[in-house]
Image (cartoon, rainbow over all chains, first blue to last red; front, side):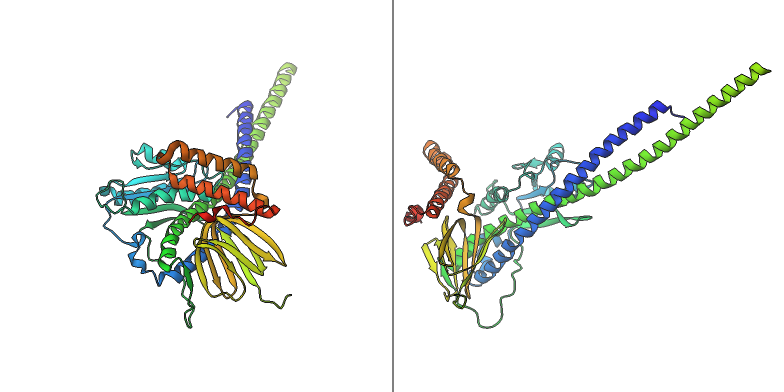
Length: 294
Length: 150
């Protein structure tokens, strides 16, 4: 039987933990709402960019653009988006596991890893992977500039003509947690470069409208594609940020519940121990009195 | 007034919809020069650079700073897709001034060693911001400083 003092100490420590997990849950809830709003307000940009791409693709021979051209995969890199902190269930592990699977598949090519988020960076550094431009601590103040900063060197290196250039790239993949709902986050593995076949919205039927283009259709198409890639990264950053908060919220919620349960159990045991002690004392007193009377 | 044709103007950035308004006139910084759009304009698609996006609403002129993107006109819908767009009230003149000076210093100091495109873009953005704030307060609005470039 544990002593009363031990039990009290344990209860106090569990209570402290519960307070922390409850506070973290509340913070995650607030941040999740903000992250969700960010996803929603980013949507019009995406649908518009696809619409404009659709409008100009026809006159631009899309297959000819370097960002769409397929090459044999020899120089491959993977962008892995995780969080900077733990305490969010299997959020980080899920992304890392999916990335590992992809890296094993491409192992013969000596793939490089672009970790975004401290957890991924630490993991892949321990594993001795080749890290390229690791980024951390961007989720607190996520900005479109971050997406641009990730996209720009990838686009530049992918566009290099020399197939022997060690700095060049033949394919880039993107691994991140997508936010489905508060209880569900799915890891997505997408190919960023070369751009998969663009799923362009159907052009409205009827006679095609003659647009005036400045400077030209092809020029606009070529300038729009890099924006589209930046946007893909931007979207995955927003999704991952929301997914992380959702995962943390869920994890902290169940941690708080568990803590409550432990406290209830401890209180129960504590009462039992106290009663046993009282009973023993009474018995001793009674026993002592009887012995004296005898 | 309400029977007159109007333009539905939308300014969209990755951060969200910055502006959605029924306006009478739009003027945007196209790559080949400023373009003016009135209701009934032909379908039109152009790239825009960093500059002033002006629009007239109920006879009053307003201005936004937009930085790189596209402008589409179709059936009196004007959509501006920009990397960033700012209202003059949100621009701090002091910061823009500092940024412009910093960009110039970098260009001079490092020359070719510093990413020239980045410095140029930073300088252009700062110039646009300063220009927009001035245009809003009604001074120097007729002289777009970026107009000599591109």
